[in-house]
Length: 468
Ligand SMILES: [Zn+2]
Image (tube, rainbow, N blue to C red; front, side, top):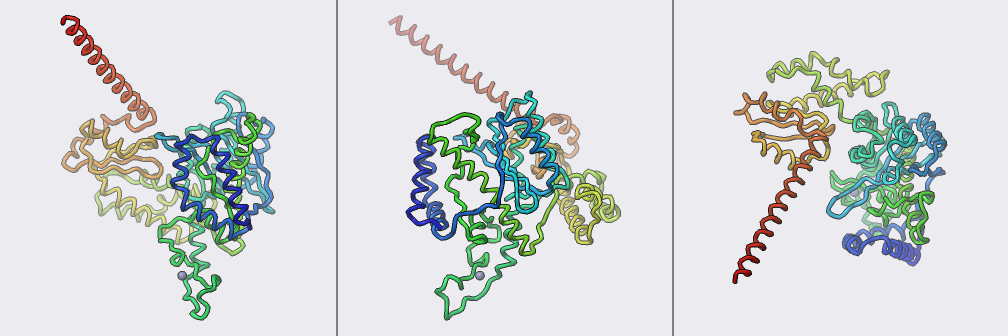
């Protein structure tokens, strides 16, 4: 493990490097939220040994990557069935998070792996022959039958579709495991609460480490660093979270100064270690006979709705659900790998889910549906657009697969057809940019008006003073 002194040296180095690359505002923000984090970081660094990954080969994917390397990576992705994925974004002041980096790990047997860092800010142009090869790489990963581990939900992948390396539809098809959730379950199972031994209650070995005693609530999400510390007794440095992952990490892209090169190297290791740490946890959990929960993404739930007739009363709706069960099961079966037969429990779960969906559906009895709504539409924006078109809505809901439901107030149900017509092309990607464009035009025009008014005013004043 690191001594206090060594740890401070690392911290100092990271500060020195980032001072050169960050604006003073970024540095201040960093300082503000770092006090508590630093304490935790220091505790882990001085308590545990540094994180040790299994053997791996790192690759950068960007405009400097050769065609032959891309081809070998594609072949590797084709033959493997286990992947871990993580992403890094950068925070741009007043704009928010921008996708910067995808870490994709291809896991082989015997604990060896390839870790690929896909640099979103440095991709080849779309008409470069290498661009479709990177798309092909993702096609072999985001496909049913491949197991993908993510620390969290697949939602973090959605903003990355703007890179056009993969589509939202591809993400919907994946079979993924939320390792963060599974680790929580694993911890609960392996560390039930135990009452401390009163004779020995000062010894740290005897302290209960169940979720409750660790101060974790029911909805608490484990940080990867804490999971690595508690489960593997290793220190995974996190001093570089939210850093400039867009600078171009690959030395082949360009040469920075020496300090910047060190910084790029530190960011590379940080990015690699995130997925490598997931791999170590997966191995540990597997060795302790944990069964991972893989689930298809939520598109299926929406397909179930599609299969049901729309104009049903509540009573025969229930009935049809029961009668048509095999029909309801079908899409899930297709997605879960075509040969797999469903267990009784799986059937029940699907049925329950369909019922909840139908219940929600009922509260949206008179509704407008927008499939594949563009993900950048916020609830606020949607509501303000509906208001501006005088559409009397009662509720707005966006499903995980970006289907937007707008419930219409009961007393306006007769006008549903008219509202459908008005909103026919709404909430698409194109509509989003149209709205942005219109707003900019409006602001420009009003600025021009303002300018015009001011000019006139000045002119009038000048004239009046001239007259004096
Ligand atoms: Zn406890």
